[in-house]
Length: 304
Image 1: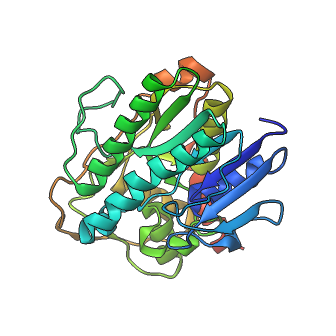
Image 2: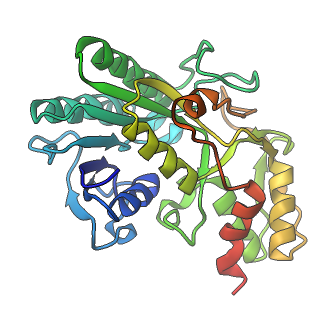
């Protein structure tokens, strides 16, 4: 993507700031964020930052491409206030798209989630999905609106990205998220301080850890190819929580045993692995950063 004007909502957040910084190397990028789950400190000076809510009027939507990543992206946040969660995750999406449509934009890429899948592996876009939590319900509502925009407007494309477990580490743009950061980042920080990481269950549950740099490439390729529909964004490899702690110990040079606690959630997403062939077939994308190498990046700040 070159010489485009781009809007990234949630642009000061974890994924959004990485995307905005990357695109700003060759494009005019505007990052909109209300600073609830983001901070402008994540952004380089080359990105124009606008502190606004996606529910506001007069958003800077006179752009060529919209990446809508703004969301209350935590199950806990939405469950604690489902009205606000629905307003931000659903109404905010529609509000951004409608304003951008009025300004002539026709390319939209938006965040969805892989948590709507059950434990059958690997997960593909052809599977039936279920909203077992309020957060999942809001993301599925986004996908239905995306389907509407693709169907109703002849020249509009809207692609929903079903993200798997995206990580980078506190040395990147995750540190501001604290308890909402990926577990890899949280555990690495604890273990570097000699603390035992807390694992829910017996540690056998799995995650498809996907580095944010690979996710940024996926988002850009999706916009470049003006894709419609929904697409998995995952590395297609699973690691258990126990395996993750072992890798962290090996990289940090520690020997820390985790603590195990009962899983406190209903409808817990236990197993995870993506089938990303749909996105690969459409764009050529595949994850390039092996989790073992990504772990080294996560731990590097603690080894200086």
